[in-house]
Image (cartoon, rainbow, N blue to C red):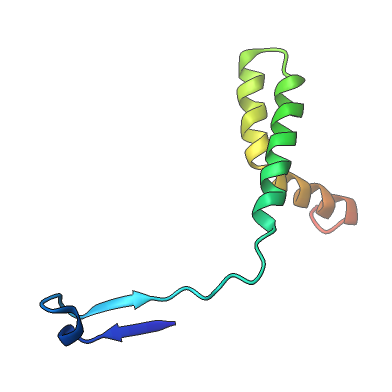
Length: 80
């Protein structure tokens, strides 16, 4: 939603486009991703045998939803 505010209300500030954010009705996805990140980081880094495998494990922990969706699509035969 966009709202134009006239300069008479802002006293000398030029016309400004203000983007109003809608209220968040549910926000549990961030917590799920955060817990998934922590769990994946512990798993991947804990199973790393070298420093660089630990770094790769951290990257995989950041991107675990993409790996999950890719593997699910491969299982269903959609991504071949």
